[in-house]
Length: 298
Image (cartoon, rainbow, N blue to C red; front, side, top):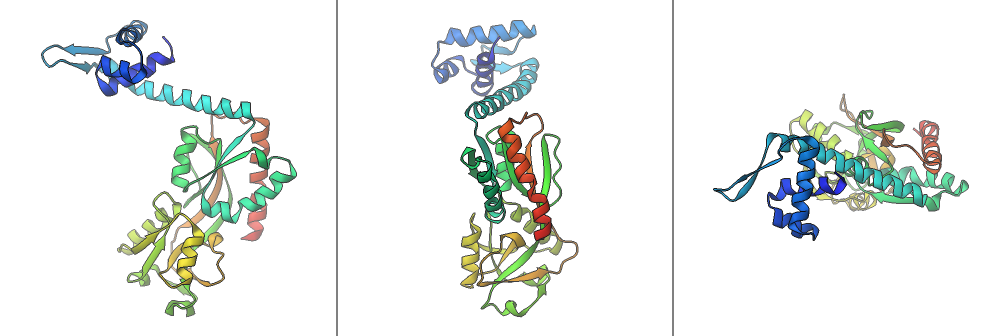
């Protein structure tokens, strides 16, 4: 029994056909049959039953149970391969959402340069929801992620390093620009420019929408906070942004007056079963030093 046996078995669960699986892996059909027999011998059970009348294979209950574990086994092997590859190369694959990348990574980068570590960083930019998936599947070593509540996951270590409010952002030309604050319900007829669904902003916006019993009119989505603010400055619409993301001098921030309301938490996260290399430990330490600086900033 070896890892390849599990890969063949997983493909058999999907294809239910020896010849198709053999073609997929570019091996002979007897190779697949032998691998399945090895697994059946190891686990002392039958994994598939051939239905001669319908010319197809049916997975037994034991086969279905093993399939559940096989998915976990192969996922863990892939994660281990990624972790060891990054340890051997000395690289740190770091997930960065655009908002945090814009607001905090320049300060982190300045510290990384001082320790001759910036060249070791391999940045991957996505929304926080997508970064969490990449973190859990082993693509990333660690990530700076956003959330609307303190992070809580048994599979991930996390530590919050900054926290900020969400604001409504409008053009200086907007009639709303004269206001100091606004209730979300008063934006029912406004055009929204927002981040896509893989961003925490989308989750926070959905929470407010549900609480106020209306769905905002979203006319455009972007993954770039600068594009969003540029469109707002031209009075194309308004947006809902974390305060730390707002940098355009041609937009106006309005405090959200709703109570309660979501807040934007920024955290460093990595897998709880991931043993940090010396370089990765240094990167973690530098990122977490942001906690004190961010507290002073906010």
